Length: 181
Image 1 (tube, rainbow, N blue to C red):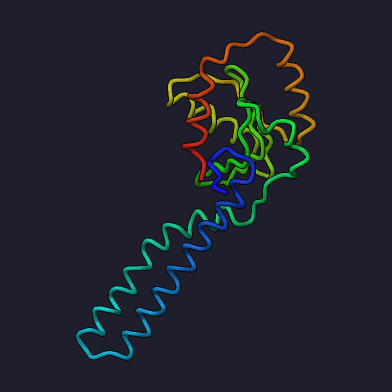
Image 2: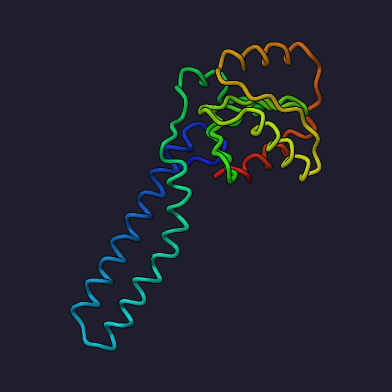
């Protein structure tokens, strides 16, 4: 089943899909390289150059694959009640030069974003990164990054008691998805 960015299970789907494509590239590269050793001189050079050039598109697939590889989706039982709610995004991984920020769950409420960070990345830098990217998209948001689902549940309860307009929900979702690996 095809998963899209923001859906629960996307990380696993991404690993499987890219793993298969990388494996295919490796097989093609090896076949071209071996064929270059068993053919005549001119054709050998063409096959060798082809195998070398095949490494470039494979590297484009390999770098995000290596980023995502060590992160898993959070437990299904924790997110099951929220799967059909359009205010949630799951399995988003944001990257910057200094750190990788795997956000297991993102709750968007009006112009407030609440996230669960699943590694030891700097929470303040993660919040600033999201605010900055949203500002580039023309949206001013407040961001709170938590370390556990329980903290997120508190924010959800508080926000459900308040009246909020979700006029920027689709734009915020689109920006977060575009930033993700």
